[in-house]
Length: 134
Ligand code: CO
Image (cartoon, rainbow, N blue to C red; front, side, top):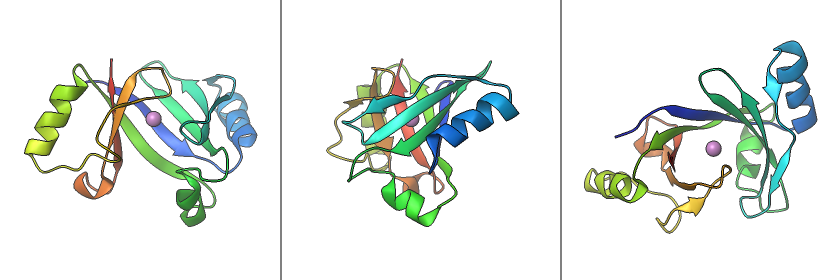
């Protein structure tokens, strides 16, 4: 069901410093920051030949990554995103297997303007999983 690894997301306390690290130290192509107020984050995408890294920083008072950054003040891997062709079919299959979809279970529009779902980390080896319909 899952296809390519779309991105690995890393939550960071300082987006400018993290962008500079990926651009200057690691020599990667780094996007400008994009605010996603409806998701409570600002994102920077790092383009790699085979996937992307999504740098996430808090935006606003009730950011969904606030508690993660409290537990990991230096930043850390926040989620992995796999591509699926049909998000509704994916959700049906996951629910059949007892996996929990976060929120109200309905797809939201993600950082790339495409529908996404998030799956409970306790059901997936301690890792928050995002599914993106491509
Ligand atoms: Co993501």
